[in-house]
Image (cartoon, rainbow, N blue to C red):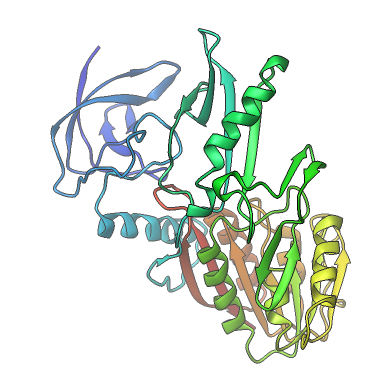
Length: 390
């Protein structure tokens, strides 16, 4: 059954939204102002498949990837830059408004740089028993085989052929594979693999994978979390350093391998806390092997269950926290009750950030600035850095 819809706006996931008597209808790859033909989306009463654009928006542009619209990796390659930036900044503005948080939101910073330095490829056999390697289709379980991905950094130019080779070698197991690739300072380009791991265990290693962070060199543990792009990490770290510039003692909570801690230690004493022992070990080794850093103390702790208490926060002139997507509600409560004069939050989820920000505001903090950062180009994901003062 074919329907004809007028698209009113962009939704939170980048889909076009039409208003109907039954409520909002979501049409991926449609744009505001367009008149489109759509068909039902099985098992999704409020979604439709776009089949034809009858009247196109003046903001519609040609996508940069031939797989766009089939591969589920990108949501918005088809919209002009100004509307895209407005929409992505609007995700942060809307999340704050829903939480009742009134704060100035800066313009979006483009931090895509050369592209993403990490990716996960899926390898599956299709219904014809043919091995396919690529990304998942939108809202579906099958894999879209791809031959290239323009959002990946040049250092991952050999990633897809390498993933296919690995999948072919393991094809006899007939198990679904997820192949995670990360570009270190030297490795993977032209299939120059430096390390191969399986479920966190090293299978083969030619040389340790190293990442430069500030003046330090960090040997990445298997499965280490990294910001999606090199430019994104640099932008986030620059903003964090800006807000901590006058502090002599800083706590870096959810520190990972130290993208903030190792840079902050160039000017301040840093206490870095995380639950991942391997990440902390890598951070300790990097700090110990780097000249002219202030002392870095790395502590293992589950900050969700055992947040740093208000008494433990005494003596820190600034606190940085960069939690996973679920945010840091328990830690925000302790920060709100503390006497820390400066708090900088880094977040990959505007909704959980807005919840945590509300807690800090109720603890007599003032939200000075919110800066959206876009390192996930063409997607509905947005990072942000926010600065609070007591």
